Length: 216
Image 1 (spheres, rainbow, N blue to C red):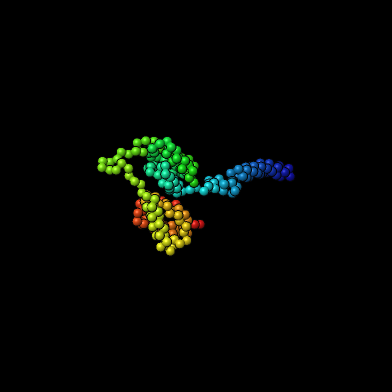
Image 2 (spheres, rainbow, N blue to C red; image 1 turned 120 degrees about the vertical axis):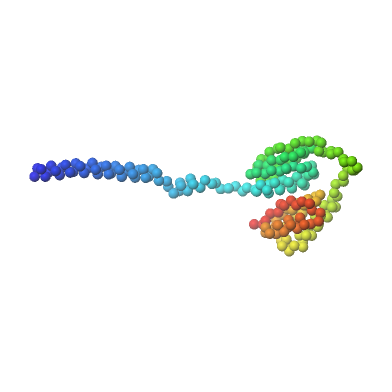
């Protein structure tokens, strides 16, 4: 009887440490599991990596807007100024005849929608303001008359009137020295392209500046 009791006591002494080890192992696993598990909500935030995008104007649109301003401005319309737009940052390169012309070009660029900063790489070159006349040429070359510009505007508008798909478009036509600026709204992208094609195909047009927007 005493031997049986002794054996039972020994078995119980062996079982208790094993159970304790199992409990400790289970607690550790649960703790590690909780430490390494990321809530679904946190995971979604961490892996998205994006913020709501601001409305950004396309680089080509910004370039066209600035070029159109230069073309219509009497101070710098005759200057060759290269406009390079990238992510809202615009770089102007070229020659101007005076500091006033440089200031005007920078002002027009800075006040254009979509422009965040303007980098000035313009060069003032007073010699371009008074080019020497060629031999046998007249000292002054007359500028195209306003009547010529108005006639060209009328021809482009007439082309628009002949196209049924452009009846719903509200496009303003401005012509200057053979360069035509189109500004306004077209009902569809196809109508916009037809307006540009019609303007380019008009007699007397040497360049078309597109500022037409497509209606939403």
